Image (cartoon, rainbow, N blue to C red; front, side, top):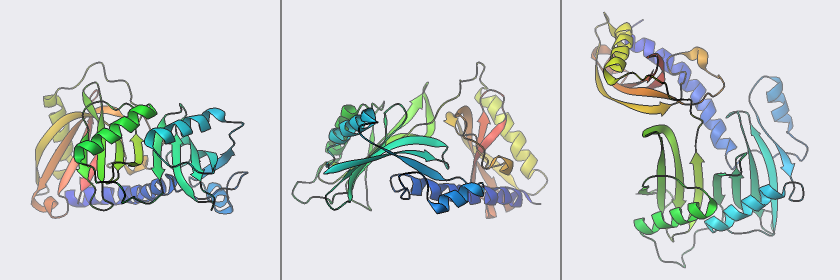
Length: 313
């Protein structure tokens, strides 16, 4: 098998799992399937019996879970979200992400959700969204105004992202996206961030906090030269003698998710804490470049093993 075919075959298996997971995540966040008061619906029961992950939930009541409802109301007010005539709650077990959270929705007189807040086990905001329409009564805010609105709402809700935010226009829904990327020990946590969508009038439209557990940093860390040697060994194993070459275009230390990109046997494994790794971007040349544009390798910063990565076809 050629180097390109080897990488592509591995990537195909990984993408199949990733697509299923991605669909599950998008379905599970703020728009999860309706659940009965007692537990799961028939489809979920069948999926569970088949060994497939499911998202299940149980109803929460304000009199039995007052802290959850009080925390959700505090976050709602901090973000300036609309209140409903009543509130509904539930505790959700997300089988896809292997996580649990509490969800409280504000409901109007017609039974429609006007806003929803999701909280983790410590009562911190995971996600929040409002469903009322945009308003044309207020003037459009600026990039700086959007950042100030986002930071003010986060601070009031108890979320305190570090560093300076990045603000971008949202071409699809209008308004601004303000986000803070997470760092730990001076190194970026790959994919972790706090993101706030600010509507054109300066009101917060949604909030999302992505934060993973981190493993302990290795006591002794590979330097860049040692990590490059590990990358070279792996790439030579794939490409040597097959007419393909490669160029290591960049390497830096980041906290990463050890994934199944180059080891399909790890597909479906339970999530583990993120590990500190050297992230190397490698550009193939020769025949391999016909099907693979870029390979990203995660090299464990402690023992130098390849623990995952990504492939751009």
